[in-house]
Amino acid sequence: MPTRLLSAASALLLGACSVIGVRSGTEEPRFQVVDRVGEVEIRRYAPRLAAETTVAAAQEAAARNEGFRRLAGFIFGANRGQARIAMTAPVAQSPEKIAMTAPVAQERAGEGAWTIRFFMPARYTRETLPQPEDPRVTIAEVPAATVAVLRYAGVPNAAAAQARRAALLAALRGSPWQPAGEAEDWYYDPPWTLPPLRRNEAVVPVTPRPPGA
Image 1 (cartoon, helix red, strand yellow):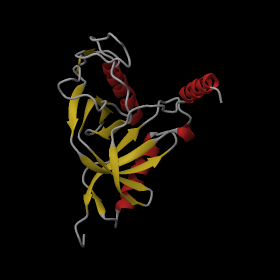
Image 2 (cartoon, rainbow, N blue to C red):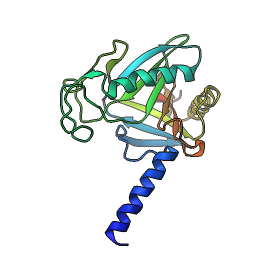
Image 3 (cartoon, rainbow, N blue to C red):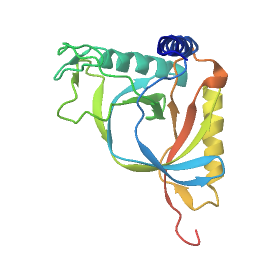
Image 4 (spheres, rainbow, N blue to C red):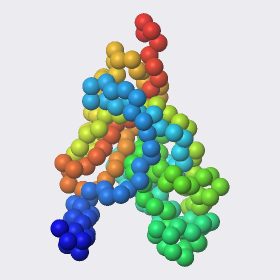
């Protein structure tokens, strides 16, 4: 295929993916798959930075929507810029646009409250990452972790997320891995993504199960 036609076809494909919500080139935290338990992956993540906010809400979806708005404000300019990002704004310094990454993480932070987290691009350090202007948004250093992950598609409503977390914990029973914390949810796609194409994950930190346990 001629180069011009190939480029046009690529642009058309990327445009179509954007309309239906498929991720294209979105950075994700690096990980290593160290084991599998049926459909469950055991992943090892390196330390990473995250912007996070805690939202009080009666429903998980409402908390996620509010948290997303706060964090999106931060990465799209509501911050005190400290460095140029050529990929998004060649001369932008303050405020700075920070590249979107995936997944968006949600975990319970007490009764009626959830913590929503955006993982930051790997090129940032604590010193170079712009600071949020919204006091409800903080920067957290997420330590290295080994987690069990169960991937699923569909609309991640509260019932579906709860069912997948339960399925994840059930799959770990009798396996070489045991939960080492609370389960949470990771979401990779915007809400307009077609349900069969959505990538959602139930996640829980794990440690090796002691012999005989």
